[in-house]
Each structure stands twice: as structure tokens, then as C-alpha cells.
Length: 427
Image (cartoon, rainbow, N blue to C red; front, side, top):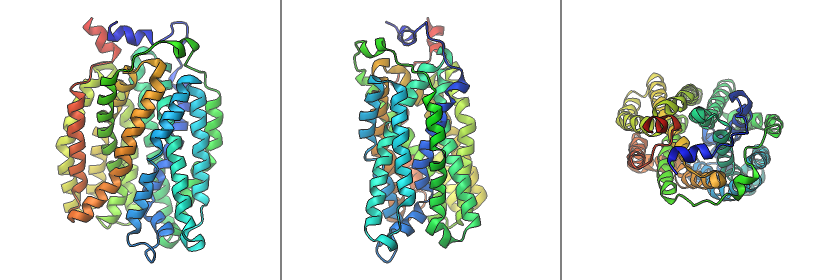
């Protein structure tokens, strides 16, 4: 069976594909989950002050970032359990389960008292709720990405799956706007005390909306899909781990620019949040374009070209920011990296999802994604801050990002093309 035949066999002819606006419920739910998870990163300094005060902890920021990383420990477990549940019970039940668990976790985290009120119980509860967040999000990406690719018309899969990343960056943009507003309106003391909690509670408020929208979605997995014999494509699995490792490190270093601007560039908090806004706005605009372009010219070509370009601009961008230490340089460098990163990350995820057999797509994709995120996403911000502290050089994030890109570009060179349009032209 050819690659195109495999792609076509994935799609039941009797089932109509959903128009893009009807799968928006997947994207909205995905955005809410990532907003809840990533908001911690943008308020890591304030959370560090709340749960790891200086009089009790030698480095509150590193303690806060370590707790951020702890949320990634349970992501593989969530990917294994909820992702496999998506292959057995269906994509829709799995997406509902992960969303409900995230709602519980974010509510608990927002309402946990500070260290000054309940002592060591505060950071313990913080860690427990971060673990639950990680478990929930680990089970979100596999079923939701599988749903998007199965609901899409054959030649628009890249555009549909781009919603996975684009809605994650809607979360980044929303967090940046809310963080900018709160840091502009509140004193540093108020932001440490309750301002960051208000940002989390915004996510809590919209959880019922996401649940209601997902409940109305049709299922894309039928009984015949569950019973189909499959062979695990191990070559694709290993390449997928390398590719998602690379894309993950790049993404989380870009998301770290807000904390980097405060801790390394000494910029005011409200101006530092502009980096998050720039990241979210550029990514939301360009990721759908990247997905659509990969539908026309191929996943492999788009990812390779953008990966090489990103490798060429990363170090000059960090050098520019650290030398000028200006808001304009920070915003321009962050925007440029975010745009090119969009064209690198999206086709990587589409190619991986497209290449996996439908019967094991949700679970396999969830585990590959969660492992990559757990090993390299959760540690990325801690590693780069540790490198900055160890070397005393603020361009250390650029070194780490360049290494990740080199690995990803090498892996992409061995990945087979999966875009149906390109495969049809080769026939």
C-alpha cells in the first residue's frame, strides 16, 4: 500500500467532513487548557514570591520554574491513559475527560493559600495541582489532534491541525494581554498577592463553555477503526520524538521571553509581557498559513526550510536583544522568531499525526508528544535560566535553541512526505 493509499484508507467515504467552524470547539477547548497550563510560566516570578518567599528559599525563581517543570512529569502518564482511552472509547470522551481534569486543577491552584498563610503545605498543594494539570494536558493533544486530522478534508489536513498550535498561541496571547493589564493596573505587591490568581480564575470561568461546546461534537472514530489490525511504525515514532523535542524546546524558550526580559534584561513587568503578546499574535496569525502552505507544497519542505532559517537567525536575535536591552529589540526579535517557528512546528505535528495509523493515532501521538514535552519542554525554561546563572551570559537560550534545531533538522531530513497533494503529484 502506498503512502497516499494509506492516507485515503483513513477516511470513511460515507462520513462527511466537518467544516472548519464546526471543529472550533476542539480549538477553544485546547486554548483553554493551554491557557491554564502556560499562565503559570508567565507569572512564575510572582508565584515564586507567593509560594517560595526569599526568607525561606534561596532562589524563589528557580524553585518556581522547577515547579513549572514538575507539571510535565505526569504528562506522559496522561498521554498513555487518556490517549489510549481516545483509541478505545473515542476522541470525544477523551477530550471531555482531559478538559474536566484541567478545570479541577486550575481551580485548586488559583485558590491555594500562600506560604505565609499555611506554610509548607502551600508549595506541596501547588505541586499536586501542577501534577494534575500535567496529567490532563498530556491527554489532550493526542485525541484532539487525531480528531482534527480525521475531521478534515483530505487536502486541508494541515490547515485543520494548525488549529492545535494556533489555539495554543491564542492562550499565549490571552495570557500576555491579561498579564499586561494586571501588571499595569496593580502594584507589584498586589500582583504577587492576588493578581496572578485573577489571571488563573479567568480560565476557570470559561471551563463550562468549553465543556458544552465539546459535548456537541460528533465522533470520528468508528468501531471498524478500533478493530483494525495495525503495526506500530517505530521509525516514525523515533523520528517524531526527535522532531517534537526540537519544536518543543524552541517553543518554550520563546514563551520564556517574558521571564527572561524581567530577570535578565531588567525590564518592567508590564513591558516584559509585551513579548508574550508579540509571540501569541504572530503565532496565531502565521500558524494557519503554515498549515495551509504545507498542504500545498508538503510538510517536509516547509519544515526543513523554516528550520534552517530559524537556526540562522536565533543567535543574532539573542545578541541583538542582550546588547541593546530595549523593548523594541525584544519585541522585534520575539516576533521574528515566533513567525519562523510557526512554519517549523506546524508541519512537524501534521506529518506525525498523518503518518500514524488511525487505530492507534490518539494514544501514540499523545505518548510521543507528552514524552517530548516532559523531557524537554518542562525542563527548557529551568535549563536556560540555569545556564544563564552558571555562565553569566544572557544569550545562553540561543545556544540551547540552536542545538535543538540542529537535531530537528537532521530528523526531518529522514522523514517521508505525507501531504496528499504532494503524493498525488508524484503518482
